[in-house]
Length: 107
Image (tube, one colour):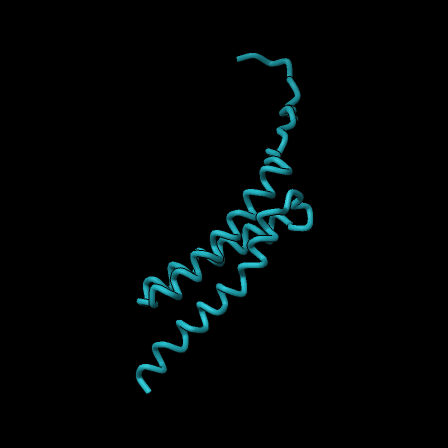
């Protein structure tokens, strides 16, 4: 029983990572990242990072941590693809206009 409790999550994680291989291959061939939103990519990356930190601090097995690292790497690759295709557009600063009216008085 104890061996099953330790081995089943690891087998499930390995099987899940193996099922990602075709998707990873397709993603590596992708040139256009327009179907992904930058907001979703940032949230997915943040979520993956938080899960990795949480499971690592809880002492998860190396197989689970490897699976989380693979997922985080995929999300970072998508985020990189979005930013490199679309570019990072900084908000434009408008010139500051003064609302003060000169009163004509000097001190």
